Length: 178
Length: 145
Image 1: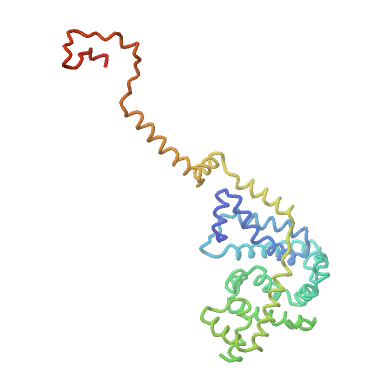
Image 2 (image 1 turned 45 degrees about the vertical axis):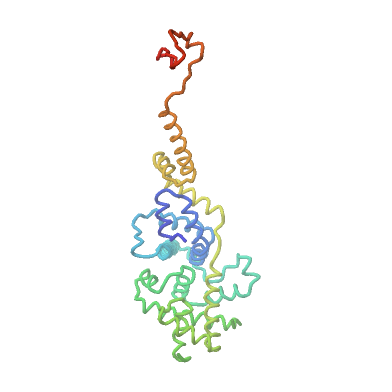
């Protein structure tokens, strides 16, 4: 299978088919992550476009220094934080960062498991949620998360252990045994 | 490895963060210890649930708009497009080359063969036989042959 970095090189050489493959690999996860960060579907769609466009057109990315996926989610996280701060400054905090589960998705209404996971995630602290999202949705390694957050790898590992245990406790409290 | 030794590694294992040296002993313990295996499965299910929940499609319109922006940014120049077509490894190029070889050989052979007589009998004119004694070959004007 062609690597992300090879696809990016092909895209920069003008091969749009490479973009289709690359976008297909990250579309759902990246959108899910941004949507969770912003809590607003339309803003998430706009930001998704900006993030992907920024990343693929940024010539400073060096594949030798890290994976494309980790870079993509790092940029997405930074842009989400930037946007959130801007909105907060405008006094519209209630519009973003809504930690209550988002009720708009049909599957949520029908699947208890999905609802419980969302509820459990909403009950975690924001740093714990961030770590779990970057790890599970962004598929980043401890090292990559540490580099993105400017924190030691060991610290990330310890915090993720806490977050994982906290998630389990919340799910058990919601009646999830498996 | 016993349960006490295995337990600290379960979360890292669920996050796929164990080193290759650690995976073997942990996996072997999980294969024989139902208690640890159950705890590991629960952790995996929790984490997989997170990945599945935050996995939404932004829709085809978003994808189409983004692709349009990308296409406009990376659109190759006319020269680049021509170069790309020429460089493209199309099998037809090979077939074309393979067909050209025998054709070239045929032309080459045709050009090197001595020309066959193309004169008609009427161009030869009358054959003049002079002093033929019936023992040798008929002597003909060489330019007629």
